[in-house]
Length: 356
Image 1: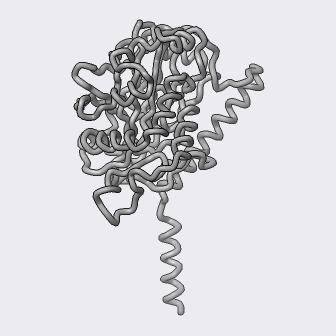
Image 2: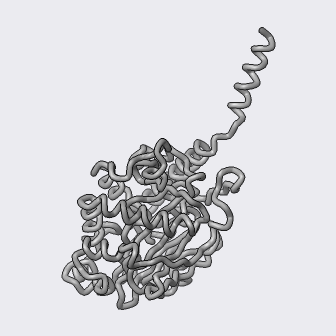
C-alpha cells in the first residue's frame, strides 16, 4: 500500500511539474491583453479619448525610420507591443533558421493566385496597381474606411465564401509546393483563406503597428507575404529584422520574378506608412506552421476564433493520408469564413487590421 501510494504520488508530482507550453503561452497572451486594456483605460481617463486604440489621423513620412518616430509620438493611441515568445526549438519553438526574413520565388502562373483575386475584385490583375483610380477607390482615398473594411477586402471575403473550394485548392497547392519546401518540411498546417491587403495612396497608414502575437496567433506561425503589384518604398510593408531590434525597413519583392517574403510575423514588429507612391499595393498574407510544431486547440481569449484544424487552418495531410486526424479539404461551413473574416477585420495585420 505504501509503495502504491508513493508511486501514485510520484506520478502526480511528475504531471504537476511537467510544463504545458500551450497553457503557459495562452496565459501569457491573456495577461498581456489585460495589460493592454488596463493601459487603454488609463489613457482614456487621462485624455478623454473615446477610443485610444485608434490614433488620430495624420500624414506620415514615407520613410520607415520616420514612421517609427511618428508611431512613437502616438504611443498612447497605438496598441502596446506584446513581448516576443521566447520558446527555444527544444521546447517546441520555431527553429532559429525560420525566424529571419527570407525572399523566395514561386510559379505565379501555375498557382493562379492573381487570377483568383482579379475575379474576386472584378478587375484585371494588370489593373490592381490602379485600384485607387476606380470609383470605389476614389471614395476610399477621399474618405478612408476603417482598416479592413474597404470594399475590395469585402469582395474577397464574399468570393472566398462563394468559391471556397477553389480558394482551398489554390492554398493547398501553395502550401504543398511552396510553403512546405520553404520551411524545410514535408507537411504543414496553413491558413486556408489568405488575407488580402489593399494599400492605396493617401495620408494614412494601413492598420496599426503590431506583431501577430498581439492577436494571439500561435508562436510557431510563419507568414508568407505575396505581393500582386509592384511594391516599393512607402506602399510596402515595413518590418524589423529581429524581435525588438526596431530596424524597420520596407520589404522589396520583384513582381517580375514572382517573389514572396517569408517572415516571422508573430514576433517581428511590422507596420505600414502612408502610401506616398502612385501605386496601390495589393498583396496576400498566408500563414503556415510546420506540422510537427502545430498545437491543437490554440484559441484567442473568449474563443471568438480558434486557431485549429477545420477553422482557421487546414492540413496538407488531410487528403492523402487516410486515418491521420484532420479535416477534409472541402467541408468547411460558411460560418467559418464569416468567423475568419470577422477576426481579420479587427486584426490590423491578421487580415487587414495588422497591415501586411
